[in-house]
Length: 95
Image 1 (spheres, rainbow, N blue to C red):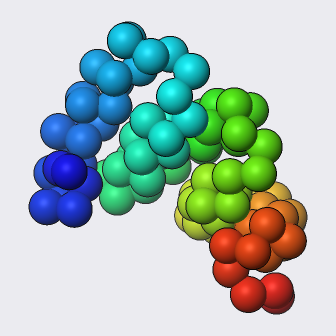
Image 2: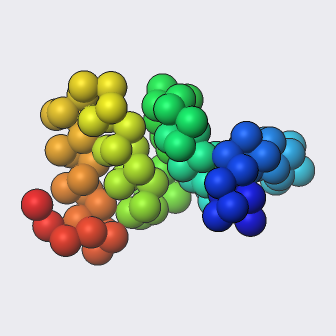
């Protein structure tokens, strides 16, 4: 996968292509969001992670990554909420 080799723009394009074929693929939204974090597109990441969570409400990794984006956008309260949800879902240890 391109995200593992740090080809973040390639990963974003691959996920976009995948979503054209399967528009309800929560993992494609989540991976695209993660790649957007790496290129510092935090608002775009949150948009994608919102979609991933909408499709899979128990997606702990998506909540965690949305929290990371919140921190970068100086949205500490939202980050706290997202990290707590990620912890409740067992993705990270409780705060």
